[in-house]
Image (tube, rainbow, N blue to C red; front, side):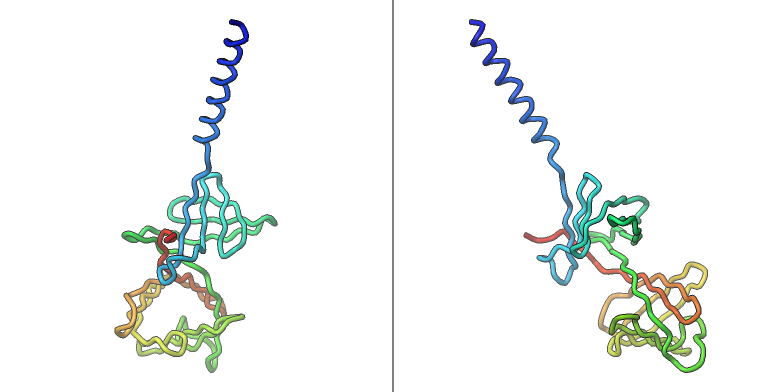
Amino acid sequence: MKHSFTKLIAICLSLMILCIAGCSKTQTQEWAYIHDKATTILSLSDNGKAVFNGEKYTYTLENNFLTLTDKDGNVTTMRFIPDGDQYLLYETAVYEYKGEGEPDGVIGYWQEIDGYLSFEFTDKGTFREDYYSPGYYTVDEENGIIKLVYNDMYADTYIYYQVDGNILTVDYPWPVVPTEK
């Protein structure tokens, strides 16, 4: 009898351990750009770990800001804002003024540093993005926002910006959705 009771206790303890281990499984959200729903670009685990563009981080998500910290303690903060059935992930790009003279606010030609992207803003309220995508723009200097109204190409887009001398830093929204598997 004592032997059966010991087996019963061992089985119960084993089941409890399995149940606890099963219940504590880490949940992960996987996000993909809307234009490539099958490729995960951002993974957020409920244990505070993240992978963004193949790099590992720890993360916090508070007040629509995603803060990623790499193993060396370098911090990257991005807006991560719900927008209907998707989120807008604001990625930072840095541009250098390449126009003539000195920049006048955002007016002028800006080329991405270490990249091929560009913005050209005119004093007439028009812009051209990446040599191709034209439209109209307005600037909210107080809040650091540029509204881009594309000519029949894309939805109106709000970007956050900062000009420091001849450097334009832009936080550009990329729609992301749960990865399709």
